[in-house]
Length: 281
Image 1: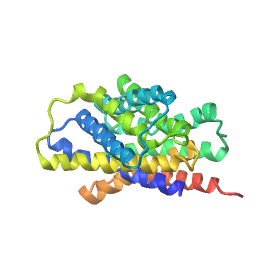
Image 2: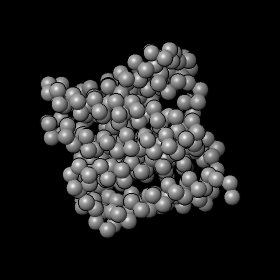
Image 3: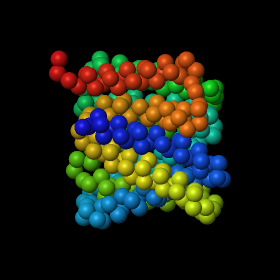
């Protein structure tokens, strides 16, 4: 069930790019989409926590949750968009999915998770697969200092979700944590919002991003993290760019080169290795 929940989260996250593309075409900027994603996602989590009486948090966790809202929501969303601006979408995507390597290292240091050969091989296959996927997308990797910096920062911010989840989701309601952290992140992204959308179609796109790709995705992800080690979960979640590529092919007929398909196969192989590595010999 843990792997199924992470797979559902990856599929929900994979919709962000294809749906956001329509929002960009309607005139919204990436940071504006990020703001409404955090705002609407936080609203849905607040309503969920309120409805099921799971809104209360211990005072001891308030400061970490607020910090997570600043770093893990606003910082992560902003750094990824800046990586795209300074280094291009291909480089940003490749560096974002250095997250499994960050997770593996920090989980060994802070969570006491054992790094065996299967995990290290899976992380290596994932990084190589994402690199080939980026190269096979038809875009060139534009290596700039700021692009690499913000790309690595976004990968680190993405990794924090796994570590934060393992530390707090087992002890506190994930709905209450997100209900507080996401509006805090939205508040820090508010200065980048120049206009509120007036078109119902755009609001519909933002609803899909806020409800499916944020609320449902993080709910699935939190359920998966309660059942899996952080390193295993982060590797399985790298199915997101593979699924996003599948959606792009089905909706717009976008295709990869042979390198891209090889990268997708390596990511799938890493996921299979992680799943099989969790079973008794």
